[in-house]
Length: 332
Image (cartoon, rainbow, N blue to C red; front, side, top):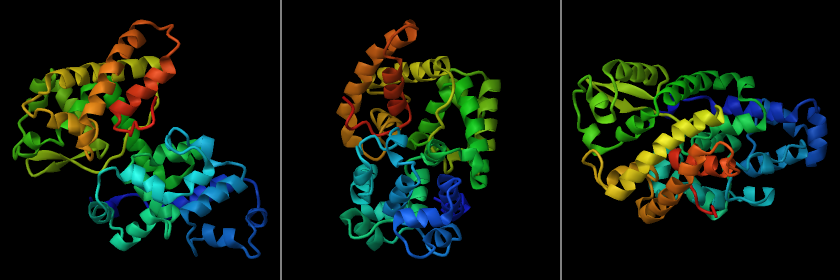
């Protein structure tokens, strides 16, 4: 992962603090937080870095507590006090990923990650934003819920990429499958990509395949690798669109997912494909995911067929969790 090419999380964290402070003066924030010196100024100038627990307190002091505002992201956390427990939070996010792999992937010192998980210390807001972006895919959604992501200049390129990727995915639901297929061994072994490969597998016209690849390249979602394509850094889609858009996209996705579960074989990759589609870092959840997909498959039939159903929000949330690789622990 070439994270040096990504956004400047220091700038984002500073802009976030200013947005959350709003019209309050720095002195008012200092008084509310119990600081006798101008700590807010030091944070907003980047002289010192605010810790994640400090940021949780900062938001509460500004009258914008993270919960329930960020409930769609922190689904397993029930209070702002619990939200400050970064050890518990990171354990939920890491899943089966080892400390070594996590540290190496995001260039965090292993010792620091160990201390975060044990509760001996906490990451800074800047570090948490990096995790939210690269590990969870929630950076723009996080900023949207706290204010407006568009007001943070550093996010402009990411938002533009999201819009391109979202547009092509709503137009062609097969994009979700193409991206996940790129994670599998059969595709990674393709040294020379031949036009029509995706079209044949996913039932597309050649012109549609060309349009999809062009958009994915423009959004930075994929990149050329010699004579083939590979996934580049990307985060989960920003969830927007009408209920009809969501029905179309997730309904198509889930119906195909259900077939994968039943047949345990797709594109010659067997159940490995499901691991990549749903929980790439936690394959032991296969049976649980399979059961959820079967139940959701029954729900989506009614959800798509009956516009008057009272379960739209629940069904949309469930489908989003499955389709966008979110952790579904704790869902009733």
